[in-house]
Image (tube, rainbow, N blue to C red; front, side):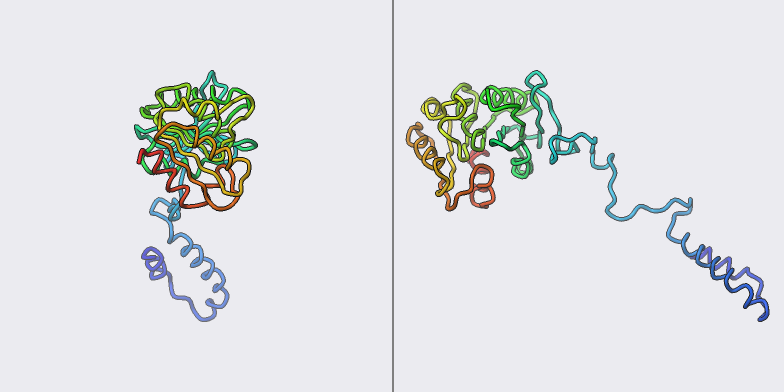
Amino acid sequence: MHRLASVIRQMTPLKSTQLAGRSVVVIAFIALALAGCGGSGSGTAAPTQGSTTATATGNTGKTVDYCAHEDATTKIVHFGGADLEGVVIGDGATGVVLAHQLHSNLCSWLPFAKRLGAAGMRVLAFDFPSTTGLDRHVLAAVAELRRQGAHAIALAGASMGGTAVLVAASRNSNISRVASLSGPRNFEGLAAGRAVPRVRVPKLFVAGREDSPYVDDARAMYRAATADKRLLVVPGSDHGTDLLDDENVGDQLLAFLAGQ
């Protein structure tokens, strides 16, 4: 603005007969000068407050499904012979593998995965490529998360993912704990009901009271499980990751996976 004032002071005063004829020109000149006042001395417009760039956020433009974007806090990974794809969130020594339910993908776990990451854990949420070999895919995710830097690794699965993590935990003695949300006892040849007695680490079974037959399966597997087990049955018929809409369920699951 001081530049504009200087220019105006240097202008030769106009006679009254000239003023009318040149008023439009003067107004246009002032408008252009005012438009330039918001810029820097170099003429480059200052960035608006809150503007972001790919460099500032670490965004690489890579995505998984429709929800996960690689940035400073989220890393896209390929593993299991490049057949599996997922995202790693967080950088803690405690790791958590999240396995999704049928007709879903890692997006169903993503909000909770970010919550776990913010709590200091390193999380791998991934996509099953099919409904077969689910336990093998979970174990491949465990190996990848360990390669990423996690040590003690817990498992959590929703519905068919719950079946998969229980069976995987019965096959790997290095799993620290396992949680099943609405996991059926049997799915596509996987028998979680038979595997549960062989799972020696802490176990959490969660189900909605009106979500039959999954609540019955949760109760049956809880009874068959060895010591260090928990059963959380909540009101309603929510299934799998929908159970996390209940704040109490999310709080208890987070505390369990954190070893509390």
